[in-house]
Length: 112
Image 1 (cartoon, rainbow, N blue to C red):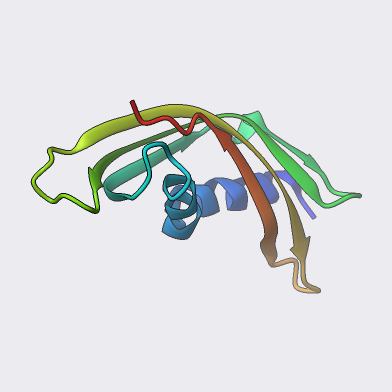
Image 2 (cartoon, rainbow, N blue to C red):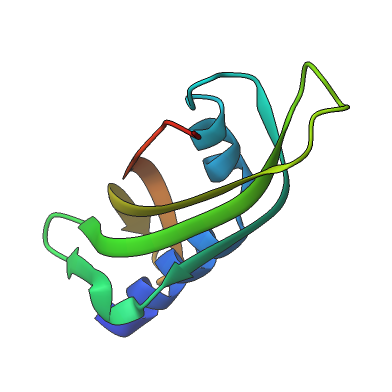
């Protein structure tokens, strides 16, 4: 299994999986925000992969989004731009398809 293939999968997963970032936003302070637009920037070279233990870590990524208060639709959108790190566990099937089993994202949760 190629490490570059694993890195590319992790970048794609973190860049496109709204559920991951929705969970992050559910833990922000103050609470109860929804996301209008979001973007994730990760350099694949900033991802360390241990094939033997099937673990990975993202040393540096950047998450940005426009959030709105779910409780008050009249509030203007607020920009939330934060660096993050992540770690997780992946597995591959016999066809070498990769899947992330666990992911933990460390990011500053204060929007303001």
